[in-house]
Image: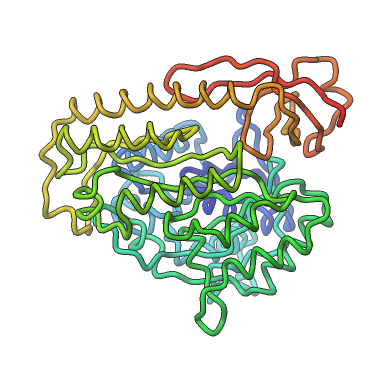
Length: 430
């Protein structure tokens, strides 16, 4: 029985796709290649922007068109918030929101076998355990879901619900399982990682990290994203550990005090600056990435320039830039959408070009240094500080295995327009 997955959006979705396939694989399913027809197709959707919604619908329609006779299921955040829209697409067999996602693999088994399975209801958001990566070498580990923040532009709390944390010991057991199975990198994922709570309701993220680091001997850990208020001395001191990737993605969204207030973010530019400066002080050569929203209703040219000035001063290595889009059910809807699309596009392109400059500048600072890289296949590598590229010695591809650690030096860098560039690596001896 053949199945295809189309996964969009965040690392949570990728973890949950791996979880769904692990259940189906244990029951005889196989992944279909790109040029193969599939009996079942699952589209795991994102709804962070209007553009994401359009992409979801296009992928769903294309999957239906190119796989005649396949049963197409849709799940994820867009399925949670806009179920009726997706149910009305001809050819969609079933729509399962995030609250139902853990049951989807068992529903597919029911359909295939023609009889109820023994486990199809009352599964929680952390039902998948002992999940190994499929089609990628680095593993995603979901430790938290949902969000209690009330950012005025964000639809995700409606899609993911309020914050909930995975059981502390279950997380540690999963880390052991992944390491015992030779997984080199474990990326911790969640909507709001730093919010992680213990069973008594107290914050426990730093405690969890400390206990994870005690386990690690071979594997390394990486954080997917962390909110600005959670970047402090406690986290940064833990990140000095040799098995903790020197990478932080901290969303700023805007460098304007006024716009941040209208966004209902819980910090101001000066506070953000202090936390990033502390991170740079404690962790030299740290790769810093951030998210920026441009064209928020109250963002004039003055506020946009404030954002760009702060980004220049802080010296990020990479920017993810998004044009603001009105999201159904958010408080920012009341502000309308007064900034023309062409002006939003100009600001996006300006910051994307700036991101390429920042990444090129960062590359110069790390060239020739020694790093631990993990092989992802076909000679492609990623280092602990998120340098991505390939080995320059092509004949070595055959002697190395995906997932293997190697000591490497970046020796070349090819900038790319409007995105990060690519490094050339050579093997190095310590």
